[in-house]
Length: 459
View 1 (cartoon, one colour):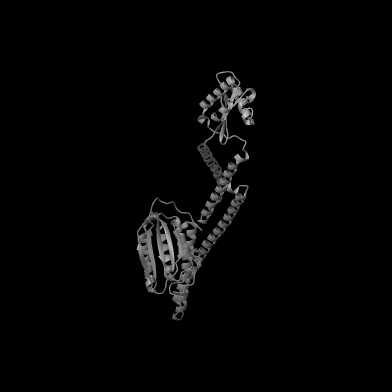
View 2 (tube, rainbow, N blue to C red):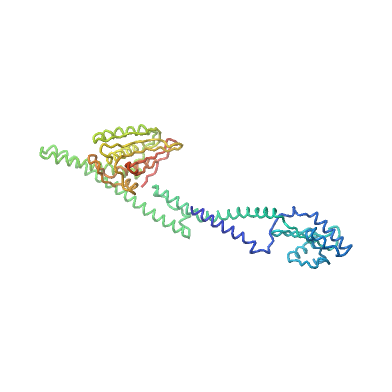
């Protein structure tokens, strides 16, 4: 259960409990009610007049007979003193105050409690007699239930709003910080906690400050890494160029006895040159310099067919194959060359780890009812160790290959470049290890829609 719901429910229940027990703690307090319109005022006025007439004509001999029929009414004389026949009735302080109010205003006064209502009125409003009639009108069970349900409904609404505000006060900054952390995790290294969070004087403020410090340190490390990668790749390029020139001159001057050694030097120089080119491409992708070209609309089916056809030539040399098992065309807007490079790298990675005479299966389709297209590339190799699904996309991460030594062992940059190329196209690449089925790489891409803005560089 989310912390917002927990805090909300706890505060709500506590508030309800405190308000619910307040009538028992303050039992002498009257409860406001709108029962005046339902009171039998006409009957009470008739009873009051009748009791007064009987008292004035026959004294107090028959007054007791009127009490049950007239809501146990009491006839009071001046200063709220019960007249003869009602002298056994002792008035409470609330009733005394109610009678005093009637004497001063000569109008009907009421006071409501939980299950009854006290009504005080002049016994004869048409005369100046000081007699007051005080009756107790009981509330029916149905009316009591309705009244309590009405109060409970108001209680639920008021306490619910209060609890929601309190819970939002505590949880909203945490939710905002969580959003900032999510953006940072997606590669936006410039994101920081808002000053309204980091400047707070509580634990949340300390958390915001700590997050900003951590973000600055990570951004600095990543920037230094990118700078080192770019400079190292650039500095290696010039010596390699001179090495290739010197190697070409040596081949012209050397005799047949050095042909094997020079050939080996040339092979290693080519591999080193390829590594430098991949480092430069990765550095450009991570810095965003490779995203200056225009975004174009292209068809995924044609792109996948083209990539599979090119890699198939290499696959045949080693007795392996590329097979498209599902093809549902869809279009997208993005950087076609970068996505083609990503597919080449993923397909060659699958061939490298596929079994002897194995097959790499390719599927592409658009998810039903979604604006997302998917490309799946699955090999039949040994897969990867558990927990390495994200690590394989890190630069220079390599795994041992027992199935084939003919295909180049790889530099450990292919999948890192593929991830950056997919991210540049606003997509996501992920790995999934299926038991007994090798490794499956999934590329999810947004299908053609509104023209996207150029994506930012990511770590």
